[in-house]
Image (spheres, rainbow, N blue to C red):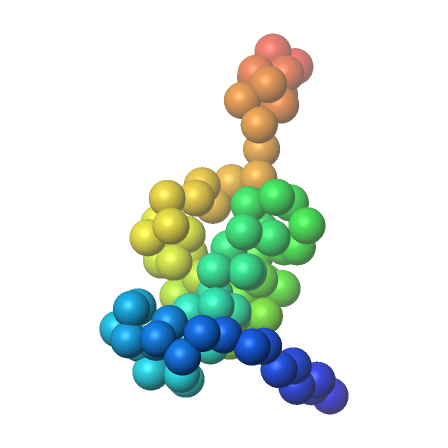
Amino acid sequence: MTIQLTIDLPEDVFALLRKSPSEFVGELRLAAAVKWYELGTISQSKAAELAGVSRQEFLEALNRFKVSPFQVTPEELAREAADA
């Protein structure tokens, strides 16, 4: 099941971003998925599903957005290393 949302945007937003409406929607979904993944709200697989891309494409998008594919803080890594 899918739900359709309507968003009001200024008319010139597509020209400013040099994107068609469908490209803009795809980029918006991807940006939201990346951000929610970065915040730890959703998993990589759910984020890829939300963005409508494969997991590999989502990992490539994380790189493009300069977001780590790892959801572990430096402190958590240090604790794990100390416990090993």
